[in-house]
Structure formats: structure tokens, C-alpha cells
Length: 142
Image: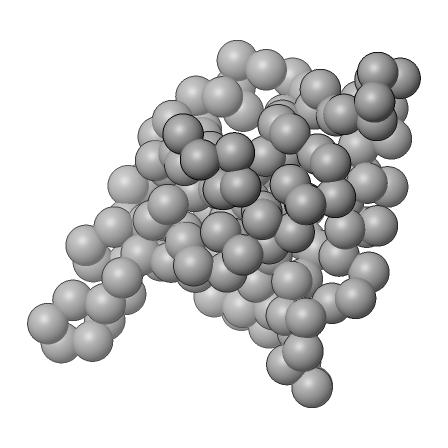
């Protein structure tokens, strides 16, 4: 395992971790529009990595994540014992966001490798070959 990369989880492994560890948090890092209108895992907390209207990296991302886990930070070297599971559309942005958290000293960082919608199929459709929604895990939308 590369210490510079977040731990990779399948959607089912993430669901299992969330159900077996009450401290684990699931953070949906997609844009506000994706989170609201495409849908998101039930119980996911929204903290955008890149968001509209400027589509730039959120300069407060790490701070916002640290605020979420204040109760789970140990005093030993500022390392969080709270598992932070990141999800995006297909697993690419969550990998980048996870690397930012690791650079800032957090260690219990995971990302869902298939994301919420997964990769596109031959017809360029998502949610048909992988992802949280494809696997039938609980989700909702507005």
C-alpha cells in the first residue's frame, strides 16, 4: 500500500465499514449539483472538493474535513482515528482529495474506487457497470 494514496474500498467494503464502525464517516466530495440532483449515499456528508461556479479546488476542504472529525482526533501527533471515506462520481476526485488529507497528516483516509456512478459503459451511460448506485446500496436524491 502506498502511504501517499488513500486506502481503496469497493462500494460494498465501504458500506460494511460504515455499518461496523460507528465513528466512520462518508463524505461525498462531488459538486453541490451532483450531490443534490444526481443523488448521494444515504447519510453522506457533503463537502465539495471542486464546486460550481468556478470549478476550482475548495481551498477550505481539509479544514472542513477536520471540523467534521473534531471528536475523533487523538492527541497523538494530530492523527485522526476517525475513518474518513470519500466518494465522488467514479473514484478519481476522491483519490485526489484523499491525497490532500494524507498530506495534511490524516491517516485513516479511504476512497470508494468505483465512486457513486462508476465508469461509463459502451453507450456512455453511468451507473450501469459499477458504483454505489449500481450495487444497490442505499441512496437518495432531492
